[in-house]
Image (cartoon, rainbow, N blue to C red; front, side):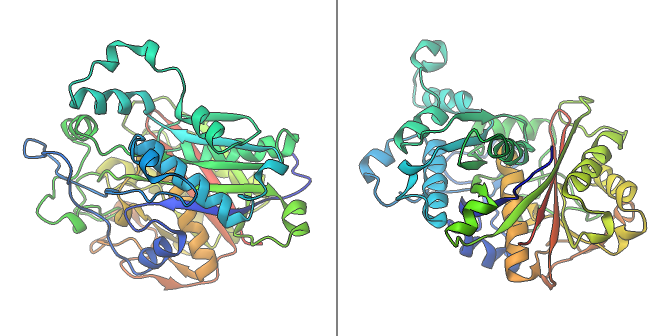
Length: 405
């Protein structure tokens, strides 16, 4: 599609293991601080992996009754906080009744999380699905008085990228005037930790949590789970200009392919993921030589990081040793459904702060991941074009291109 008017990001709301505001997140990200620790809130003695990046408390947005907020499921608290914070940041909160505001959120396991939380307190809600009559997305739209369409996206780790693309499409079509888009996940639960742990997908470096997530490092032994989310306000460039809005970046390009090779293992054929990255660059009108930073999907698994290195080598050729690359999952952990959204936020921080976030714990680069790594410490740099890869479970391969405005 030809985008007559650019689509700009004018507001953000977030809560991650690195902080509950954009500034706190950016500060800790660029300081190279880990948000990973031993799991709290439930007994992990029998779990093979006992560490994660957790949100122990979600702030209550101003204007919302704290007692009511406390009764919400933690995932819904996170969605509410991120959406309200993004609308306030953009300047649309007080004016939201004047425009059609859409909502597109990645939410990976809403009902499963409801049912698990209920079962752990002795409930039987899993056997009574007729009681689950309103989704979190629908309720968020209603409670926040949004007048545009609302939809949830479930594309595993790629959900945030898909949501941003969908929001841009709605704005291009004129279906909405403004759109909230992003993803949230509170996946650090007994069932999820046990499931991924028994698959041997998680790091078992329990004695040193902050050193456990180590993308591209030769000693990596699996990913570390994390909670969090990020929601963005998108609007046409002309609207943002007319109200002199603060602008974070343009959502310039998007590409997607599916390989459906395996539920959790990356495809040995790099072509589908390679095609997604190339499509995103074409959509943004960029060539590989114009890219200033790549936020890698790299989760810290032995197979996945190598697979992505091959994709990047195929796309960027000789430039793969010039374009700086890092995986911020080394600090946040893998936020699963919310991963792509929070990594897009990391790209915005790189643009605004003129600094590249590092891959921490990268002390011995795997020779099969021979890339231009930003290792262990942030690096000053002007970022005009950023690429964010998200290759989800089940083969949902996506790439997002963000441009500075």
